[in-house]
Length: 248
Ligand SMILES: NC(=O)c1ccc[n+]([C@@H]2O[C@H](COP(=O)([O-])OP(=O)(O)OC[C@H]3O[C@@H](n4cnc5c(N)ncnc54)[C@H](O)[C@@H]3O)[C@@H](O)[C@H]2O)c1
Image (tube, rainbow, N blue to C red; front, side, top):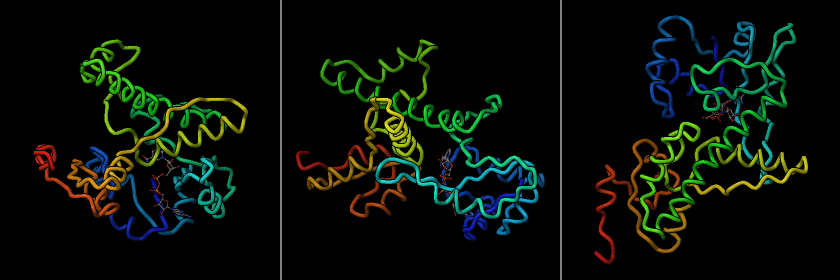
């Protein structure tokens, strides 16, 4: 596999086997694949395009204000793609949408788009659902963690994405839920979807109310402080939960 990116700094990091985002097992997999000579990185698009039988274009597809996906990066990339009789898959959706080891499925483009958006909207719905259950638990005295464990015993429900918390965020769920909602409205289908509630919005809201916040995240803490320098970071969850409050 030959990978291309316009960002030289990212190419350097990847060549050194040091991804800039957290994904368990990825550094090991990267090192193994590079060492085996099965993956290299280049700034030369022509080299990357000439190499492959299948081309994955994995540029960002950020959300526009109306919820639709902004395809400008995708469209700007299609320039150097040669029509040398090669199948060209216009967008890479394989990472989070397809669990490792899942069978390969060939579809048309409309179906492929919907598999990604419907899968992520479904998982986001599970997160929002268990958060609503948590709100009910708080009032009824039930333990949401145990409710989730009990639900997960049923294989039709499963254990994943049933952890109550601040709500979903990250690069894909809010974007794909917005795109899914926008597309269904465009097609005249009413698909009532639960709203996104990422942790950063909760933190911003509390700061706006004058709260002093001590937060902890095992992976994304530093990035969160970059976004919100007013937020203090604790070295572990225990210190964060024991931070002094005005009433303690
Ligand atoms: N982040 C995820 O977990 C995830 C999971 C599944 C699918 N996806 C999908 O993958 C796509 C990319 O997501 P991402 O999070 O990796 O985005 P990203 O913005 O982190 O990465 C996109 C990369 O494309 C590069 N780029 C942009 N224009 C370019 C061009 N003309 N030539 C070469 N490189 C160019 C950028 O420099 C950047 O490194 C999106 O469609 C997203 O929905 C992402």
